[in-house]
Length: 91
Image (tube, rainbow, N blue to C red; front, top):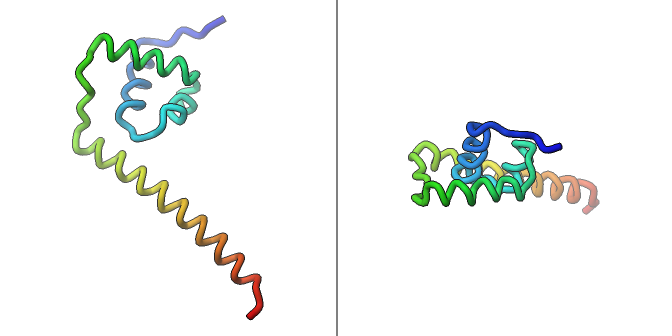
C-alpha cells in the first residue's frame, strides 16, 4: 500500500531539493521518501512550470553557508584525528 502525500508536501520537497544546496538523496531521506519518488516529482514540476525556481539572495546565502559549514566540520574532524595521531607518538 502506497502512502498518498499532499500537494503541499510534494511542492515543499521539490522546493527544498532545488533550492537548499543539499543532495537529492539527502532531501529524500529528510522527507522520508524514495529517491526515485523525489526525482519523479521534480520532473513533473519542471513539466508544469519549466522556468527555473529563482532563489532569493537569502536562500542563496543559506545554501552557501550550509556548504561552508559542512566543509568546516569535515576539516575539524580531520584535525581532531591528526591531533590524536600525533599526540600518541613519542619524539
